[in-house]
Image: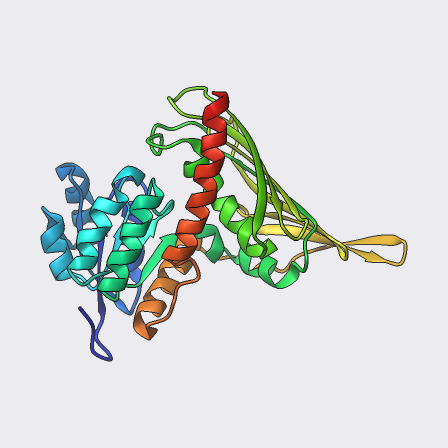
Amino acid sequence: MGTKEGEKIRCGVAGVGYLGQHHARIYNSLDSCQLAGVYDPDPSARSAVSNAEDCEEFIDLKTLGESCDVVSVVSPTDRHAEVAIPLMEAGCHVLIEKPLCVSLKEAEEILTVAQQNKAIVQVGHIEHYNPVMTFLEEAVDQPKYLTVERLAPFQPRGTEVGVVLDLMIHDIGIAMSLVGSAISKVDAIGVKVLSPTEDIANARIVFENGCVANLSASRVSEKKAREIRVFQNSGYLSLDFMNQKGHLITKEGIALNKKDVPVEKGEPLALELESFIQCVQGALTPKTDATFGKTALEIALLITKQINISL
């Protein structure tokens, strides 16, 4: 399925719960897009978003796929593969929310079907489209150590997987991108609190170039936080992904100089979807493509496996 020059890209959303409704809202606001419609197995959810965004309400995936050029897959993680694959086979490009899926076997299937159908796949590692990450990509040079903390209050949504696949996978992807080196060792521990899998986790990732990343995630916290600190020979950076601000400390002789960093604020999800549409229009490879998503998933599954041994 393709679009002629000047035509709007027909967009759809499969899964319109808490996050999916925002995908629909943003597609509906983009000048280059036409929100063709939404699908959700819950009739009340799809009806509510269909009415709010004045778009069609699809009762099955098949008709959604036939009516769209691109579709956001915002179903529960354990259903990503079964939703995304038929959409790609119908000729759609897909944005699959992170994590890509729940197993490396499913990841391989998604990659194979994408290649067979020349489908562009972008994985929703949203922090990579956050202006904070844009600044980090320019400012980080040969990091020696980084630490990331991601905290959120408990909510049942997302508990079909543990906190590593739910939250920490964001920071696995961030660390991989900033360090730019293969991983040599991983140590992890986790604790179950309110769900059948780990709700709190810590992972220490050692890269082949010597850099160490310490990642902490909790989905049973009383506060919200998404913060990163990166230490390198020139000084260190401390940034807040949630509030899109932070500071940079650099060496000046034997003194330290602190200054606020110039982060141009923007809604990360809107920036992510705009980037996806630009990739579709220009037949470009997304920053967080399926190969990236599979690599992040592989490390997340390794961490999860270590945690499960100790639970």
